[in-house]
Length: 305
Image (cartoon, rainbow, N blue to C red; front, side, top):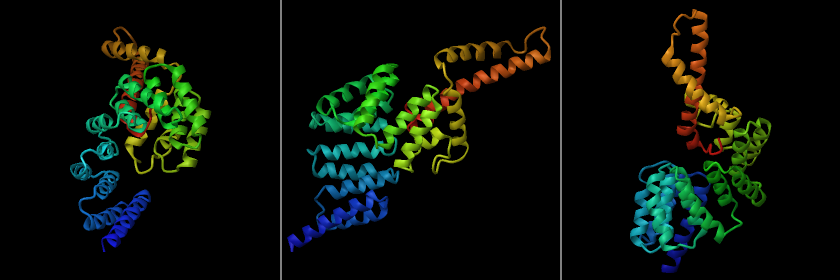
């Protein structure tokens, strides 16, 4: 009877995994709960429920990962799962501690080191991320995703040559990865190469039509995120992607503040004041586009702008 129950338990786990990969999260949870009913002391079905809930953006997801940790506290995979329940919901700050604990338990795991680099990248700590990603590549130099993350880190650190080298390596290793193609699109877009950016975004969508980031790059409605926010983001992207940003940014900072403070200009006609006001508004729009990109854009994978 025990062997028969174990076979059913394994079958439930496989079904739950398949359903989760198909996006059928509620059904996946049901199968995992059936597995728990057979062997409540096994950790894996708790983790499967945690991942399914995280994909559903449920705040209950970490609780199920913690149940797995309580049953098997020395397994680093369950702490990784706890971290993933936060990253899948965009809670990057909370993801740091469990991932750090997982790395302490398995310090030579390149996947964990790479994931920690990604978490720190989202925490706006590129220098710290660089350390983890570098160690990950030392252990696994052929990992395309880690090269892509390294490229983003170097872009944040304003090291364009190194950024391009790692992006090129990522493409060589995995040219059919849609996220890498999307990164290539942002890379071209940030340099004003709109035609090449468009080709890369379309290639990303050919591989995975559900990706949000390349849709935003193409100016298309971003899946379910249609509405005013999407329109504002696309408009901000067009402003922010203008060439010579390093020159335009300080110019617009000066124009925005100086012209706003001095309006209306004394002894000037209304036509002149109208022109000055238009320039001031344009400068403020340019500066606000940067704020929009930082707040909204990075949440949608826009790392290269």
